[in-house]
Structures are given as structure tokens and as C-alpha cells.
Length: 102
Image (tube, rainbow, N blue to C red):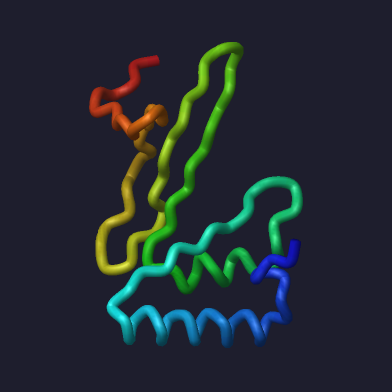
């Protein structure tokens, strides 16, 4: 599998520039997914830098319990969230609005 973030840095920046021009010209939306894990592509930082909003979803598994938390560390033109949001991912997405008490 060839990932865009594995392209030559100048080719990748040109791709992102062309994508930005196309999205802006069509009043559209582009969603880019960065891999996270053991082999993070070198240019993932560039992807996050050019993005207007960055979402980070973390999943923790403890025994039979699965906990999903969403962070929004970057929101250009808005406010990034100061803390994570606990999500329940089933047929739909539920957001826990009460605070966790440890």
C-alpha cells in the first residue's frame, strides 16, 4: 500500500496545495486520515499542519471495557477543546456529558 504521506516531501506539499485549491474552489470538504501506531509516516506532521481541524480518537481496552475518547487539539478559526470527550460508539455516537469522577 502506498500512502500519500510517503511521497517525496515536495510532491506531497504540491498535492496538499492542489487539494486545498480544489476544495476551496468547489466549496467542498476534504478528510485526511493520518496513521498512528508503530510506523507513523514522516510527513504526518505536514498533514496536521495544513488541516483546519485535527481530531484524535483514542481507544483504551481494559478487560471487557472499551473506552473511546475524542480530542480536538487544533481548530483553526475556532477554539480547540480543553479536554477530551468520552464517546460511546455503537450504531450511533453518544457523547457523555457528565464528568468522569475517579
